Image 1 (cartoon, rainbow, N blue to C red):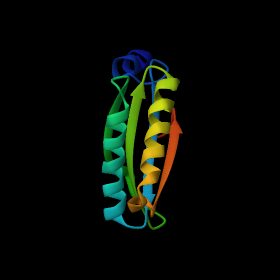
Image 2 (cartoon, rainbow, N blue to C red):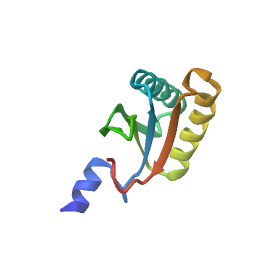
Image 3 (cartoon, rainbow, N blue to C red):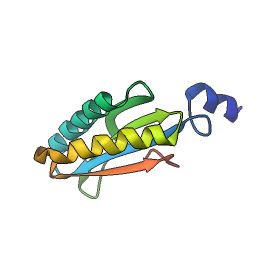
Length: 112
């Protein structure tokens, strides 16, 4: 039953997932940075990757840091890596996002 569920929703092992977590001290900056990162991802995906979010992480604030995440689904790890790597390069050029941290987790065990 679990295998059928995962296949229908495009979860591993049938597709690859990546979680982009953006966190920082300012809720407004984290939110705007997450939206900007999503826009950059959209411009780099070329149809090979599905993008969900950004939305607040299930635990929106941990240790004083606000957290938003975006989930990417793709058929191959190479496609996800290419989209994420290029998007990070572009995102890091914009100094407006200097106060946030970006974490990438490929095939995450948890989305919390």
